[in-house]
Image (tube, rainbow, N blue to C red; front, side):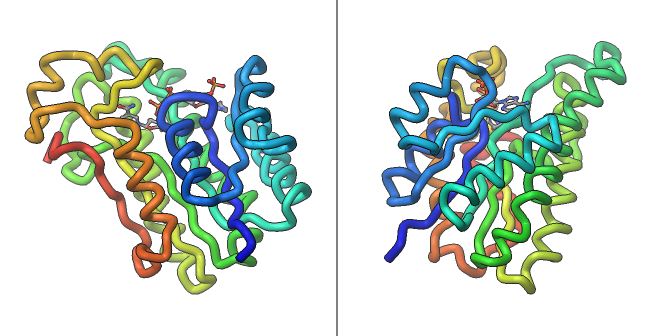
Length: 239
Ligand SMILES: NC(=O)c1ccc[n+]([C@@H]2O[C@H](COP(=O)([O-])OP(=O)(O)OC[C@H]3O[C@@H](n4cnc5c(N)ncnc54)[C@H](OP(=O)(O)O)[C@@H]3O)[C@@H](O)[C@H]2O)c1
């Protein structure tokens, strides 16, 4: 069988990188998107010539050329994993309108632009998409230290359900994975905060490979009837 083609954003580091590595292991042909110029050579060496793409996903034109670059190389796209989503910490009194706009652009509008660009190709392949949320959105709890970020992720979650509903008749499955507290070499300071960690019922933080395993499953045939879901990988944090 021909290998399936996946585009992973945020693939230069952190959870996006872990997902890209896991999907490579699973047998996918992985196209890795990155922003920082310095990462291109290493990503090409790892994922293959022509499979590392530089793009700023805050720019709709970059999203379109990113998807087009994969289609030019492969002629198809079977899956999209959008792991970009920057973080802003602070109470509402310290979150400016500009901070909120940035959070919305990075976490929500980028997904709209990217999925919009990928939609025809995903329909053609009856493919799948996984977006990145954050754990604990369903309760609409006050998130006093991350209000701008969680508001943007909440917008993404509501939009994800709408697009999943809309794409289902075309054979496309759209889901979300929502990490809890997952430290890695570049993660936000709060992933190392003992008070946060003490609030995780499983008694420990999560590992990047546990998030990647969830994405792998959501893209697999085992999840062929799963769509519009927000799968938390959070050890019960914020349940
Ligand atoms: N880690 C956690 O505990 C946690 C918890 C809840 C949710 N999440 C979510 O999981 C996802 C991944 O988190 P992470 O911890 O791996 O994040 P991260 O370490 O901050 O990595 C972010 C990645 O996104 C890329 N990126 C950021 N802005 C971009 C832009 N405008 N255009 C293109 N690429 C851009 C970065 O690329 P460059 O390196 O090239 O700049 C980097 O590869 C995010 O959506 C985050 O909100 C993470």
